[in-house]
Amino acid sequence: MKNSSNKFHGKNKDYKKDSDFGYYSKNTNRSKKNDRFLNNSAKNKKFENLKKNDENNTFSSLKRRKPSFKSNTEFPNKNSDVYQEFTNKRNFDDWIWGKHSVFEALSSDRAINRIWCTAEIFSSDKFYTLLKELKSKGVLIEEVSWKRLSQLTYGASHQGVALQLACSKTISLEKLIDFSKNNCPNPILVALDGITDPHNVGAIIRSAEAFDCKGVIIPQRRSAGLTGTVAKVAAGALEHLHVSRVVNLNRALEELKKNGFLVVGLSGDSQISISNFQEKAPLVVVVGSEDKGISLLTQKKCDFILSISLKGKTSSLNASVAAAISLFHLTGK
Image 1: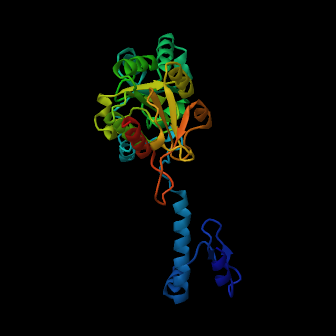
Image 2: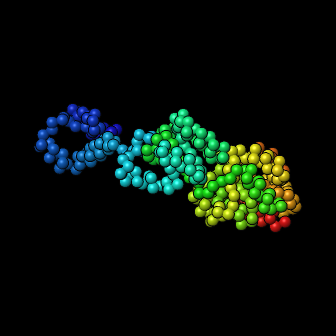
Image 3: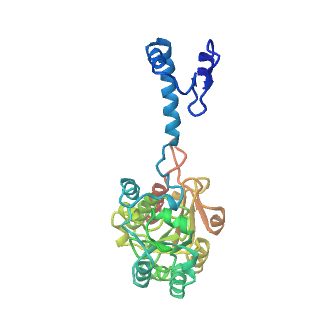
């Protein structure tokens, strides 16, 4: 230590620095008499305190630190309290991992929200066929490394594949179009663009069902899936509303336009107020994320861009609130 060097290098010229602990001593085999003298000296009490601090600092740096979970090789024992603390932070009630368990779930009629798998899984013919079919139905399939999958499952024996169940089944876009047009002369559908917050998705689904919309369209990527949080916020609305999960939202909008739907986007920058909109044809209401709104490519697919007139100083609304207000105006015409 620099400060101890300046303080104790005065009268005794034969003091030398101990490289292990960073303090100065006259020699390594000091007599007991000198030890008693040092202990009785007021000045040397400070010296002893400095020595003790230096020793503690030196040994504390040599102590083994707890694992920081930076890689899959650093997970603690599954019976340890640390492991239980980390696994409790994520609710795995809707998760399944392991080849046999996942394959049985994929082969059954259960609703799947998302699948994570390593590249080795695609080499299996039975898995490849099932994954290809599920992807065409809108299930998000993400190829990840073995390390990443271990991090997601907190070191579980996943065998290279894991999935998250959905709280509700989805239907194809074609079935949604047929159902909506056969049950209402001017149906209204809601499409979500980039809404990743499950609370917003659940609230929009709840509002859509409350205003008698015929369905909700969710893209495969950049959107929250039908998780347990979505179902909880929707407060039972998912049991009475059809949801279609599409691979590409813009292609889905083009298909809807071919079937007679008008695509209406919500944006605070539009000069057309939704209260002045009078069209009564089948509608698709596109709701964008709060931070970015509707993407530019999706805006080009819209037939109309509408805004909600605000009278206060607040410049924008929550996405789910904007959706509810818009559906109130459009269904009341």
